Image 1 (cartoon, rainbow, N blue to C red):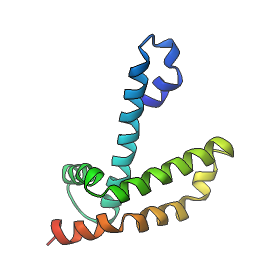
Image 2 (image 1 turned 30 degrees about the vertical axis):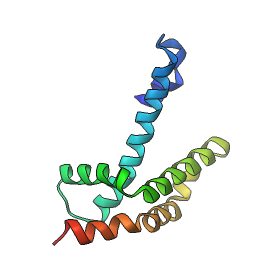
Image 3 (image 1 turned 45 degrees about the vertical axis):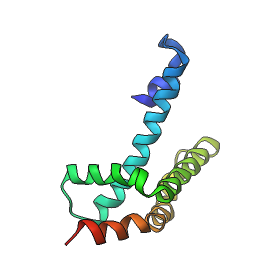
Length: 115
């Protein structure tokens, strides 16, 4: 919904600061989703606990969040410049890179939030 609104923003009639706010919310949601993806794939937490931990790690582990943001920028640029099929073709190396860059998140989750 955010992406659709931003691509057709001129038709909305909203002020320009609203587009910036939507962009920030969209990027934060994507980064939160990448942390949630890592936590969901490696641990068996309840959905609400996964959501809370992903939000916690957004600010707690800035390097992991920055690494996830750089991967999202890379995928977005490659998709815009080349083809939409490229992220699907590069899914395995991209996910491996996300897993390696989320090492501190994984270690802290194992040490502090599991038995």
